[in-house]
Image (cartoon, rainbow, N blue to C red; front, side, top):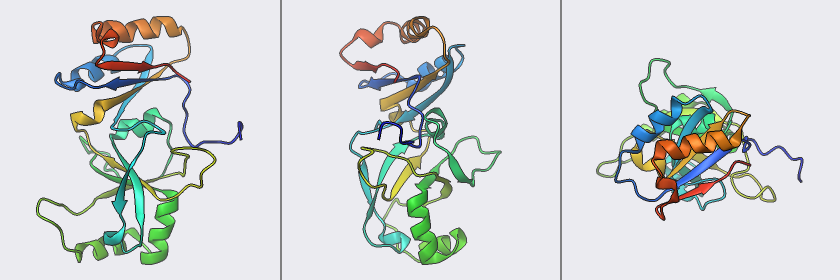
Length: 204
């Protein structure tokens, strides 16, 4: 169990639990990305192991529900989650859409045969007021979102760049002097890490 591949890379990752989003978190994140010790920064409303939300698969033509989390595209890169299929336009300024895991993708393909057929099926489904058709932007290799003892099921990432996704900000650091890297983060945040509104999780 200890040697089982999890499908993501938790080493050298610092997680900031930001409870107060009254400041624009993107200013903080852009400053982090410019620092030498930082490889990448990703945002999500939930960290690994945190209870995910559920989405009905009825509009996908399947029974049951899938677990999903709100995140941004950089979060997948930061956590080393492999994309088996990537339908994101290289010219896209921002990424907005859904990435399903391989388990759910196989179920969808068994039901519809292709992404195009799935999108055609979706176009026939009624939408509630304010809803928009789901844009499929990729397929992620299966990974253990919660316990490695549990069977991998249907899972999806709902991606966009909304600032509220900074609730759990994930920072991947280069190997090296961890103390200096942490001091860099603290200096950028301006001492806010010591306040009750923010919690810090050290790298694995």
